[in-house]
Image (cartoon, rainbow, N blue to C red; front, top):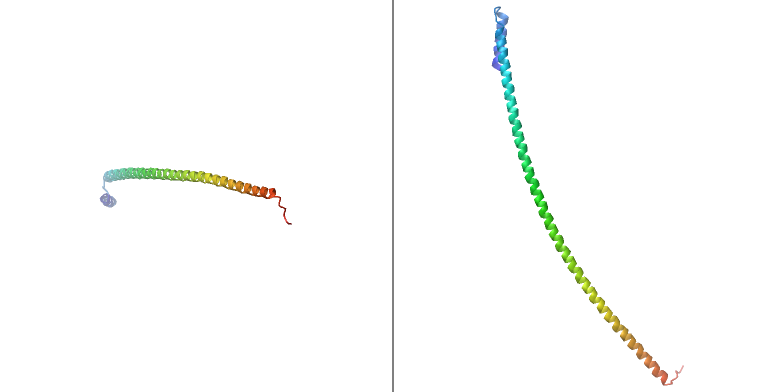
Length: 147
């Protein structure tokens, strides 16, 4: 392009000085400018197309990497979820076993309390009967109290 501009400058100077200058020479030069412009435009379009293709390829690679990362994240989430479910099941089983043990202990304590209450009632009845017998013996002896 610089060479064409230099050549145009020379032709312009020659046209000013030479009265027999043929203007078609400038027209030929202008066609060369046009051809050079089209070449530059085509090169620029080609470069832009190449950059576009590179950008699209980079985008595809980024999408693939994102997909891999998302899949890895989902797999990690599934593993964590399964582990938490196993832990929850184990904890539930442990709590159920403790509840069953507490229920059995409560039943045993209830039975023990019932037996103790029956013995206490039997002892109270025995004490009351003994007091009554003693009172009957005293009353049967016709003893009068000195007061």
